[in-house]
Image (cartoon, rainbow, N blue to C red; front, side, top):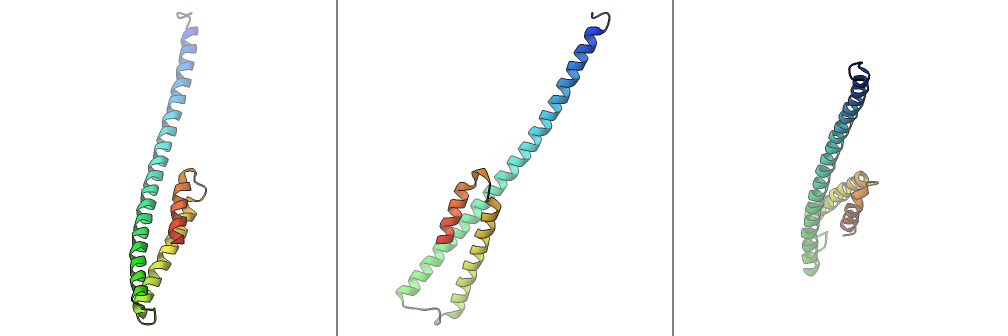
Length: 121
């Protein structure tokens, strides 16, 4: 069979199928790796932004508590009140954008929970 070339054809055919499948699997692995790297980068950016917003909210909370303790209202410090309002609005917009980006993602439950906590604060 080998001398007649019959077995060679079968082996070559199977080898071509194997090589084609191997290339497909390699390409899929590269696509998946890129997708995972993008997901990791996005998650890291989201975590960093959430952390910064939470830190900022902590500072604003202390600031407002001090104003309340000193019986200072927004009319007495209008520029500071406007600055705080701007920061809170900016945070709210950022949180809404993050919520939209993470809606429907499998691993986003924790992130959405953190976003909800930050929005409530």
